[in-house]
Length: 106
View 1 (cartoon, rainbow, N blue to C red):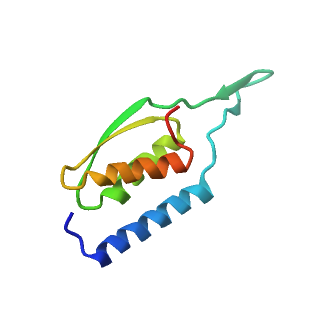
View 2: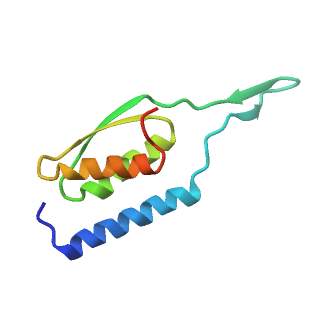
């Protein structure tokens, strides 16, 4: 898509650091008990937003697709991404990465 090898390597390196951060710091959002007063119990539970659609720009397609997608997938949302016409293969690469990571359909 017009990047030099050095620029592409820098983007891949940044993407790896980002994914590693989430793999080391991700905590599932579990129901939390909160104090609701005398002899009452209440729970706070978070639900996914739903289906998220985002446009991935051409300048950093690998990094930006995972930056927008990975945290939302970990929260249980569904992602639909539209990649720029100038870098169509990045979408296939991101899909392969996510499938290998266990984030396949369902």
